[in-house]
Image (cartoon, rainbow, N blue to C red; front, side):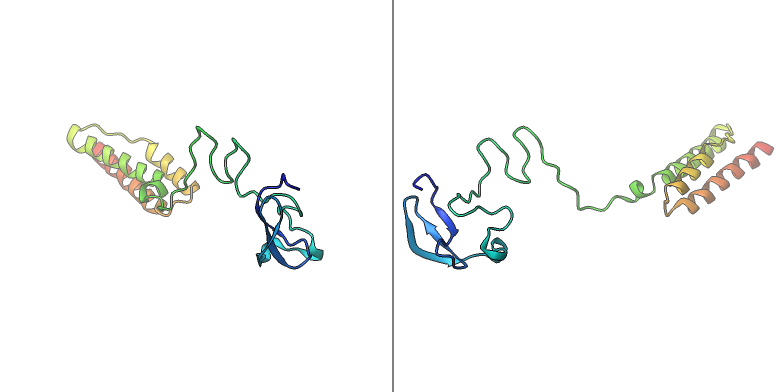
Length: 153
């Protein structure tokens, strides 16, 4: 048993404690075993070493530790920041932008677009469940009505 790495192992005398193996022999040094490491009937818990097996805290040579990226790979860190107002209401914002462009072209360039584009983005906003979809619908109706009124003159 001299090839076993020094470390804390279940006490060979059968107690619930752990005993220190110095690499050559058992010492008198013991400690209370963590509750998660003990299982029913004195058997090692799942994922724990059996008697006489080393309890490695480190991964095998060349292998990444649990939860760590492999060499040359980036780890994914989820963002804790909430998405912006634009990200949560993308189609509604696009609808408002199109309405502003329509109104600008109608007022200053005297070019009237009575297009379906704002309505299509409103439909997408409602399908996406955006909270500002009703406001986008009102903006689209106002923009199209404004363009129709200017086209009638």
